[in-house]
Image (spheres, rainbow, N blue to C red):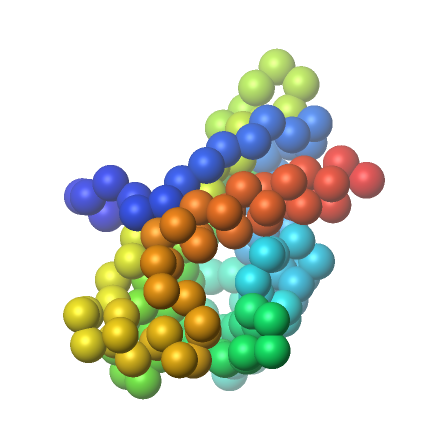
Length: 154
């Protein structure tokens, strides 16, 4: 767990067990069903939701598209799923889903930490079209959690 606060974070309460939500978010091949920016993911090297496994994510914002490689850092069924995003060999971000049981479901908190060095913050603008990544991630997390709630409750 990072020692600094996330750069963007939000939470939603869903009518599903922490395990059901974990099963959804840790199956990265389903990310495109609920993510606001990531349209698809595929495991690399025959990976699964285990610490150290890698996957490629394909992202889209309008007409712009890009891909990244991520490595799973936390895989605690029913509690936490997290991964580090790497592009051009450089750490870009950490994404984390924390799950806490409630009386009739669970609270899902999605958080991200922007880890890009200054040069990559500027270099990524023409690729992604995003100037303020923190504001964009804040909006995207809210949309993602709304979509995740719909998927997991259906």
